[in-house]
Length: 218
Image (cartoon, rainbow, N blue to C red; front, side, top):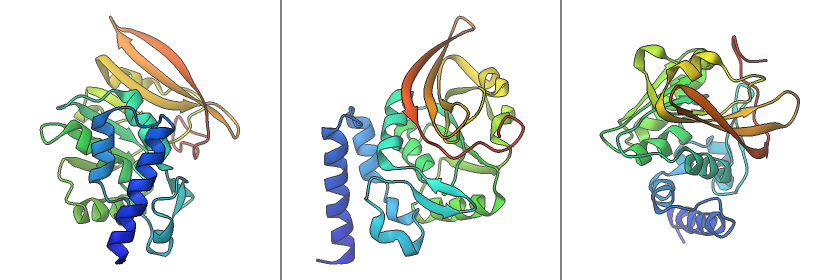
């Protein structure tokens, strides 16, 4: 079997596992994860682990999230076609690529990453994957990017000790934000919904993320 054929088989097995475990619940998330070649976003020396359900190091103390966590966060976001999405902690661009498939060509993903070297890597990866509706920016993620908002969905891929107020301010009415919150080695994955200018929170259990950097980080 060719290397590409083996990658495809590994991807099929992984997605089947994620469906069976309940991380993938919708056809839209399944199709989005099928469409994105994760191997394009994984460092070359780790390509053999591309479709292993584990986070992988991408340099500068950061990781590409485990596939089950990407699926879980995408499901919790309940993304609709045409949504404007803010991603905090863009990393190597993989999660943004999946988000771009969910929002579609009429939607937009604004992804901010504080590490400038990773922004360059992510832009290159997204180009290789032919993703055109993602804008990668170097910025302090806790501050969001108000100039591009408001956002119908906000996803944060780094743990924050508190929920950054600028992100709440940039969340559109009726919008949803998913963010890991907590101090120490473990956090709680929080889903926040804005309704009638009020914020409603729900805890979706314990997770482990790299720490958020910047004004609202550690």
